[in-house]
Length: 439
Image (cartoon, rainbow, N blue to C red; front, side, top):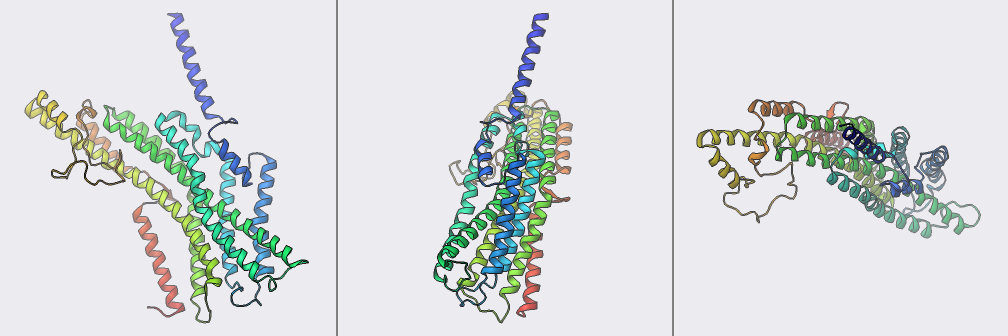
């Protein structure tokens, strides 16, 4: 007996040790390439040296270079193709949102650490499917970041090269005109690349964290397809809700301030471009349009990720209600026709397609259908040991405890997006009424 207890203790200690080694950081862990990317982008603040370098690069490319570009290279005396009347709005918009992104990222990494911030320390409690898919999504996040930053940088690079090459003699320069313009062009492109990368990096990280919760919700949906007890379902759902509250608490200020800054930037653009005295062409407004596309794309990543996880979390209520209905119907069938007949019926109707009216499974189905949003019924073995009262109590709990991403108490779902769109449209029509007289 003593040997058995000793072996059990050793096994338990080995499990705890392996779990601990899974949560700590090491050189060749899953975040190795991501940390290297942060160091190359000079946004790593893991030690005092990299933190000082990070702040220096931020002040250089987000403050000093845009200010010098606006005050010394705006070229008000240039011709109509090389004047930049909207440069102030472009520089302020990009610098303000990039400053917000940099401050939030610096706070997240310094306070929580990259591994804890991305919830890698919690993956030891997840299934192997969740761990593998989340690690794959992390590796894919850098590609997604390049998909957004790359086209914007290419368009800005083409515009800047043309602007300096065609207007070299008109643009203010120091010493040699070609060397001065080349240095100024490189600095401006580096500033644009740095600011847009920092903006999209924070948004892509938010998308990555939300994707982890979607994976966990899909894994949680399997509880309704096996013979689980109500206590285990409640425990797992409370854990997911806690993580959603943590994400909301960390990102709520960033989401709100990003929405305010992007809205203010777009209204400033609208106010300047609707003046009747202004003459517009592609050369004047091209950079302004590119800035607007960049900021709106980043905001769409935030809002889409938040609403998607909220939609998935709220869809659990419908899944639980369907699970309760299937169990109730099956219990009535069993009481009326016997257990043997019920087993035969259950085997025949396991996962039938609802509402197809004779259509085959090969017919067109929704691409968004998964373990949560599915039109299939629940098999009888998934609720065989749970009473009606427990199932009803669990459904009531889901109905009265809707999870999701919140911003200071306001849940970010589709109805919230409709409200935001209505407010923005009202402000746009009001501004147009004040500028060009639209009614």
